[in-house]
Length: 537
Ligand code: GLN
Image 1 (tube, rainbow, N blue to C red):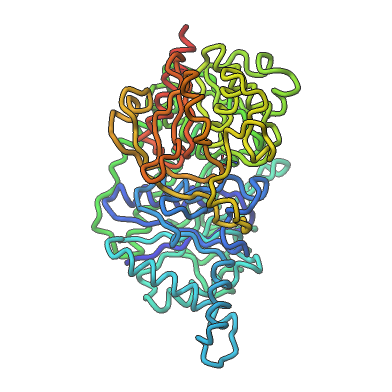
Image 2 (image 1 turned 90 degrees about the horizontal axis):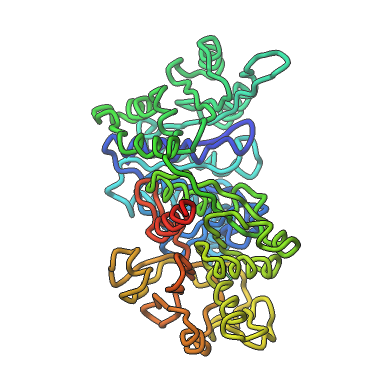
């Protein structure tokens, strides 16, 4: 196996994850099998317990691992199957080392950062290598910025690892920022020089430097960076701000032939240069669509760019599929409580209520669902959004005044959403929800079954604690609510819909974790199609 390590310098939010994922795209299009992973230096065992304000979206894998949102980029940009083995945090590393110490596995030795903690990181590298023999290139992104104290052990472990597997099998890529100083009219290379110097102090000489830049990277600056950072001129690669969509990133990085540089460094030079027609066609459809729809996403962390990342991306995928630009209006659910649904989302073509936790903004989301139902505006509820639609239907159609989820009102008169028995005694917050892929049965004759192409069983990813309360199932069904899918194992309600509505559908799972650029998720595709129809009325 060959290894690529992607580190970052100067500042965070450079698009390091996108750079890493784009390299994956280019290598896959050269016919190589890639696998991507992320090392995160923070002390949380996983990001599952972090607030979206800290971390953005928590991305869930098939096996139920709650991971960094960069793994979402990896799954959208490449096809390698990811598991909990592919997101390692300092929290996991220390947890394992300390448990080993308690079991006496260090045979009386003093347990130290080096070698015991670094060994644990290297052990993970070896395990991933062994478990994925078919992989040609393993791409590992290191979270944080070089120079952060908390990242030091990871950098040291990678230095050692490269020596062990042979430097010819490893390519170090450092992503940095070239700030543009307006007053001087100049792009500055000094921060890059200093950050590479820092990396070299830690024993790592980068093979390729990716320079994130607003403007173009001129020849003088390329030479300067090459000279001071001790890399060849051709190995200084520009990574420009893309004009329209993140899916342009692989095309941008290809301009400086990054994939060629990587395969040369790793001795994989015989692979053909990438045929990217499918990717280019997708990008063209995103940039120059024929139609346009406006979709409101009504949530609680709406001011954060990253909180509903996968949902926004899924809407883009579905839009491209229908040659449609999806203009997303991000709506703070509390604003609907204050000003009413009509004034906030009165003129949109579709309303999406995403997942969420806690009671802030809940009533606003319920109003949004009601407005969509009554005015025949396409509605798509995801996880919490499905629970919201259930509560709204119970209250306003079944006449169950006071219906609620016990998450928001423990003593709700009609607890139409509630905890399952097995969730009741749980005290730990981390990794204790219903998580990961589970099989459900689709009922024929429903809109959901139609959208999925009339298959019988689906596999979708979950991340929630509360469920549709089966005690109310009959009453809601009698009032017209259709249950279109239930879990294969326990019969839990997975999808609800309203047949008399152009598109009114709620899913207890998270379809946004399985949508890809040229393979939009069928439910998103159906939702955008309905919104398009609404816009043309
Ligand atoms: N808070 C809800 C639950 O735990 C929904 C979770 C979600 O939307 N991801 O069931």
